[in-house]
Amino acid sequence: MDAFQEFYHAPILHAKQTPPDLSTSMQQAGFEAPAYTIDGPHRVVSTAGVHPWTLPPNMLKPMEIITRSGLFGPWDAPDLGYDQKAAGVNPAGCDPWGLDSFQIFPNFVILVWGQSWYLTYHYWPTSYNTHVFEGTLYFVPPKTARERLAQEIAAVSFKEYGLQDANTLEATQRSLESRVLQRFPLNDQEVLCRHLHKVAAEWVDEYKKLEEAEV
Image (cartoon, rainbow, N blue to C red; front, side):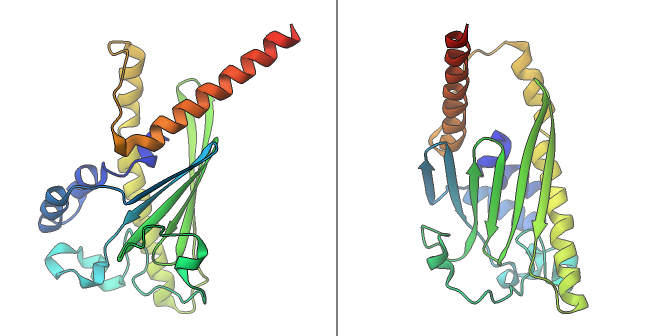
């Protein structure tokens, strides 16, 4: 979950798969989230974004131009009939806005994108070092073949970027199991990671206390 709930990795990890001009621009700009919120065991991070249709062609993939879609979703967003600001998203008022990631403890995530669609993550642990990861995308039903194609391109892009995010997990697990490092300093942009581990530790401690009380 840590690999998916901080976004400062994006300019380095994901930029490598973008056209060179965009990759260089992203790495030079870096990343800093404009808003974090902690609510009990849950948490939210909001990010700025880009309007791909405003970028020069050399910063886009040909397929994105043809289908008017990509990672951020279809460029022609549906009108949902309400004010996004009033809907509890984009708390920092970013323009352009990218997405809000709602981390619902213990294992559920909702990503609401600025282009009026959303996706969910489920993390299902199957052992101490394995798990099943599920991602589901939700769109307004398409009215035309072009709209459906734009949604399919967004789904394909999501799979590619999801695999990039998950690509580091095995190496991270091997590093943890080696016990070479005992402490891992976390920076301010990893506040969601810090919060998750704190809540999880408290959850386990509470369970242990209940076990001891029953004995």
